[in-house]
Figure 1 (cartoon, rainbow, N blue to C red):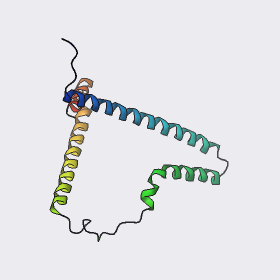
Figure 2: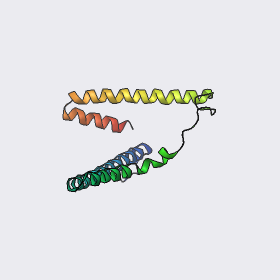
Figure 3: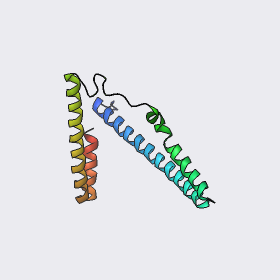
Figure 4: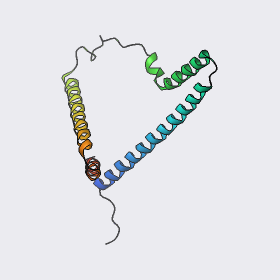
Length: 137
């Protein structure tokens, strides 16, 4: 028995696991950056000499945290009189929207059920749940 290339299903699973690990690493890195920023901000707040200086620190922090959202905030609201928005929509768009909502509700219910199950589960049962979830992707 020599080396064989992985099947499409195995490759997909390996890619999914790699994507999950990369996303987890990204989340950890972001959390570390946030913690570092928060620690620096707390130190700066302790060293603030006046309420005005403290307010300036707050304003700076709010501005930096809103930087990625500024483009959304600065856009004018869209009127609801456009076709396809709150007015006449095609049956296919309504069906697609209903399917998206149904899927979101089903996934939400599954998450809630899983969270309840985890609260009562042993470490082995939790690992089995994680493995089952990874295998279903």
